[in-house]
Image (cartoon, rainbow, N blue to C red; front, side, top):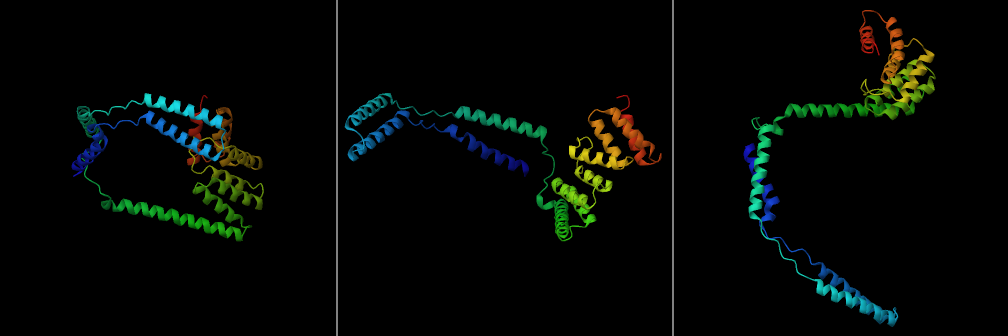
Length: 280
């Protein structure tokens, strides 16, 4: 079934693309004929100007002579172009080449042996996609409701923090930053609020992505208020390593490692990070 469909489609494409090669080409429009039409129109326009009296007789006579000279020159230059000849052999050869190349590429790189997978038979796949779309729409609706609630309750610190995190999950970094700014207004210089804002602005970023200046500034404010904050120490060490300041990264992570339980996953992560920059 698939092979037959491919053959039909290929035949249709070849007819559309190569069909003109079996017909004699139309002669190109004659440039001289175009010029003659322009000059005649200009002569007619000049006659109308003379009749209305908007041009001096001496100037009109000179213009008429010049246009008549150009018209005669165009008459002499006009040589009809011959129509193109048919090219059936070229068309046939090109058709064979297209079929051979396309068929060879398909059999080598395609998957002709795979069974058909019609859209109607992909029910589970469609259901999963629809469920994901429905869940995302539900999440966006919940975030929109929360945003409306915050307009009515602008002094709800936890509400602004939830809204900021929600916007961050949706990838709306500017909205997240605005929500955290409202939270910071309610509780200035609070390390938890500052760290939550920094983490929200990093949401969705790969660990190898550079941190923005805004995030780094927030983290430095956190350690200025709370020097032993483990999350801020980790992120600032990561930023230093990204910038090539491995000595600074080592200092941050060694201090952090000493504060973590030896059997914790966090301890293993920091130890692995220190091992990665060892000797650098």
